[in-house]
Image (cartoon, rainbow, N blue to C red; front, side, top):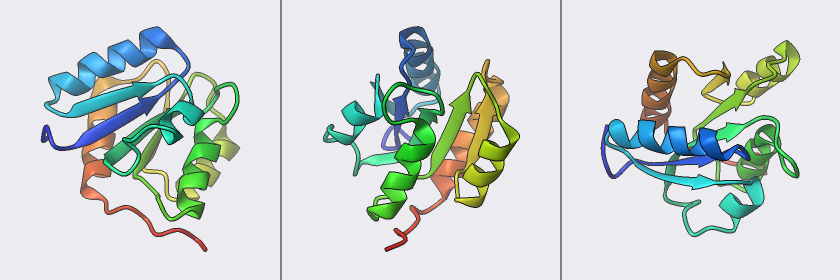
Length: 129
């Protein structure tokens, strides 16, 4: 993986964000972390993000809604959704909507790395205007 591949992590859990920061750096990628979807959307990093990892359950805008908003505005980013509370219906809908992976927490490192590799190979999806 390349240092030029920016991976953004959006999760309200600080220890999770920091562990993801360390893991992604160990893969040779650049990483930015955000405590909320609003913080990510307000950042200058949205357009540079090659892969988004977002928690499904967060206060305010959740990861699934964040992904759909990005698609609707024409800024879709290959996205991996993560959750401590997996739900089959949410997983099915997210994957049908184009999410790269839907992973339960605690994350399996090898599975996450494969999902990141897959996401970095995907071109961004066009919006559904």
